[in-house]
Amino acid sequence: MTRASAQDWVDDLLAGDRRTLARLITRVENRTPDSHAALARLYPHTGRAYLVGITGAPGTGKSTVVNALTRTLREREQTVGIIAVDPTSPFSGGAVLGDRIRMVDLAGDRGVFIRSMANRGSLGGLAATTGDVARVLDAAGFDVILIETVGAGQSEVDIARTAYTTIVVDAPGMGDDVQAIKAGILEIADILVVNKADRPGAENTVRALRAMLELGHRLRTNLHHGELLARPASPDASIYDFWQVPILKTIATEGEGLGALADAIERHRAYLADSGLLVERQRAGIEAELAARLREALLDQLIRQRTPAALEELIERVLARQLDPGSAVRMLMDGSA
Amino acid sequence: MSERKIRVLIAKPGLDGHDRGAKVVARALRDAGMEVIYTGLRQTPEMIAEAALQEDVDVVGLSILSGAHMALVPRVIELLRAEGLDDVIVIVGGIIPDDDIPALHAMGVSAVFGPGTSTEDTIAHIRQAVASRSAPQ
Image (cartoon, each protein chain N blue to C red):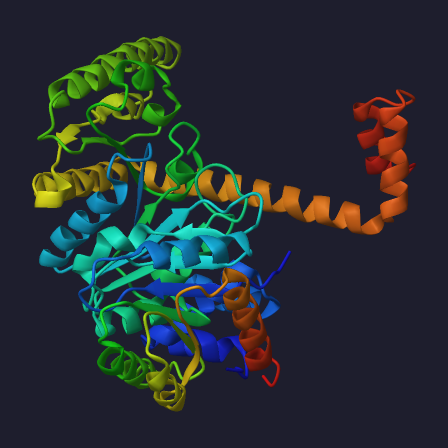
């Protein structure tokens, strides 16, 4: 289908045309020139949706939690866009995207739109274009956008920069003591969920997570008092540590505990809004996105300005120990290579 | 960095519970560099058409071993057309009697792959069908 202009894309999207939505997402994923124009046009229509991230190790039941949470949100009359990210094979560039298997319940509901995304080699749990795809869903009018990351477990920090509320899903028997110490994933959690809570060992998982949080909280409190000493007059300082990360138990396959999860998301949203942290998070997200995009654009530009032969020659010189990698980069930057 | 990935929905309509063939094909297409959305067992034609729309796939692959293909395939194609997805390529795999193949082609099925088909043939067919479809645009 050919379109006259980016404006047509955006007009049809805002009018609620689901096929336009699906096709625009494909173009955004493929980074076609017309998608850049469309994103620029639709950007003023974004910022209304609430972005929630769902991450956690493989096998904890992320997709099932997304499915059950969406049903609860639908009962509360919120429309939901879902982006489910799975890994691209580094060998073939292909992917099998299987998250929909767990989301069968949502079929036939016009208030839900599910899109599977391959991460296309991007690290950090999301695809490079996931943020832009969320903007397309946002402009299309969905109230809540749930972003499910790749289930790698320890390095999904990108989601915390993209989503406003980040949910980390754990489950009994995942090697709790060790996993909880790998704190990277816990640090980004606004809400912790212990799914499959009917399984043996669920209490142990809750206890391990609580111990981890208490450790982290004491640390933060100390820092907080340090800040208070330095800036005793700041009225905002006390707000920072106010959010206590809740640990919620769910049995997503049975739909149990999802009401409490939806409530916790609402409370966190209100907390972010009242404390002014929502705007702060958005600003930090934009800053990180601009930096990442700039890095990519500059790298592209720099590499395009050099012939492959010139780059090859530089690699050979580094390989022959005639030049160190740092100097090679400086030569590329100042144009002497 | 703009690249065009072929997106394929692999779905099992109907009630038979054997998805091994569908999974083998899904993996083979992944290994050929395609993005495969696998939706699992017991999909209704309505669910398949909806997933095809949301995922904006180039190809819908239906795996049917139950013998109900002459009922399920036309229904899926009808629903795809109703959603405006006229240009989606439909392929069918599974146990399909030779006598039914001409009728399936007449309904708009691009290819039928029976037991023993090499996955290479399926991959080659998809690539060629997608290429010839996008050429006139």
